[in-house]
Figure 1 (cartoon, one colour):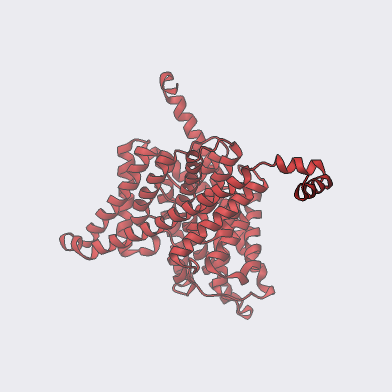
Figure 2: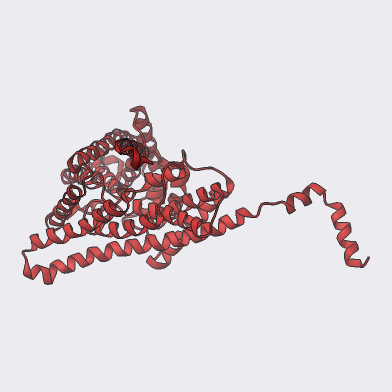
Length: 467
């Protein structure tokens, strides 16, 4: 026996056999899961970023058409109606014809897939959500792009499992969750919020384990890096940077949170009621569905000319609000108007999310509340913009029932890290009041509604079609 073999035998004799066996039998799967989650994150970030660019391109092109050729041939108002109606028609048609599960936000579909009760037809969802979302959001409807990016991210997670023929159920689940986290991180340039959204909001479906948490983190980070590489590292919302409010003013944030708790419960119920009304209107008939959607698109095309504040996702409106562009009365009117337009667009089944419209609603009411507080308590020297930021997180917390996600999302989007304490207080108040009133998280309600409608549809089918 040579010297090398003697050293090796000596070393092995000192190592417990259990340790050797554990090392040799160590499962190599986690490393592959992390590698696949990296791929999912990169693809989710790329698709999410390209989707944002595509929506902006469609919106800019629509404006150019109005200013140039079409505007010369037709009255401006008629051209605006026709262009937006056509864009909306594309979105509604793609959804109804090819992938009904791509209607609305899409987040409940991913939650259902994580629970094993909804399919993920990624080969249909990805193109339908991307191009249908381009049409719906580009028409000026009050919709956000975060729902589509979350659903597309989840679809990418399932696509990767199919491409690499992943058979392990836990791994499939982890990659699906990773795609959802990457999609949200890319939508709002908010990696922490993307991670926490899966961990907190999807907690009934998410399978907690060290490897799944790592996969979600890797995906969110890689998706956000892709977003920042293409779009830069600035916060999504450009607004003033606020200092910490006085401790004597913190009770006002709690009051604001309680008010949003009440509104959040009512808002969720209004969404369900609005969806019922739209179903009665179009009866799931394709012609009625497309006519309804096109009319909505045309209406918002007209509003883009005369009342642009009540159109679009609302993210671009937030800086104007927080820079003092409106008085309290106007803000309340806009708040009510955007509630109506949000319900119209989201409940209609258009392929778009509700995150961004909710953030705009929270900003509107929060800033109006801040202006009133500033008048009543001038000695506090507090800025109304602080309440606007707190309102963004509070409405999200009350409706989605994910306060930590709401706090992180608002901080990352606005870069206002000094407001973390008032944000916590406001979101806590909103969640406590919403729970006290018996409200349910919006995405859980939407998933339950989808499953109920699917069951009713199956019961209405003839027996031979069910098989």
